[in-house]
Image 1: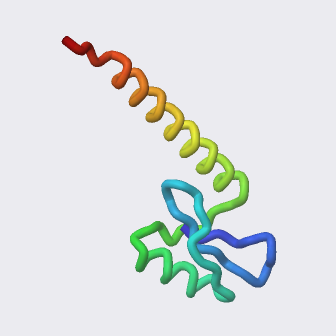
Image 2: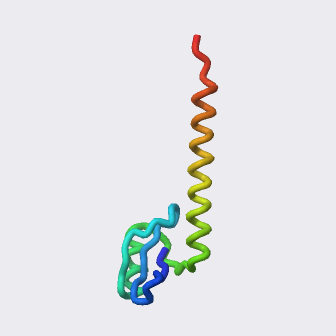
Image 3: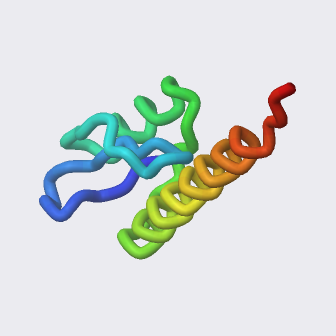
Length: 78
């Protein structure tokens, strides 16, 4: 994904899953090309959508960690 940063002169490449900023570019086209080359969407992203993506990713990681802990605790030893 590409999104414009707070600095109006920079476009960022954003990880579609985590919301992590991977790179910054001066031109939108360069950010879109970089996103595609990394296997991410070239779509533009607004700040609220980026925040939602990051919150959802964090929640998914927490659920996964809880599930791993439940599985670990459910192992019955002889």
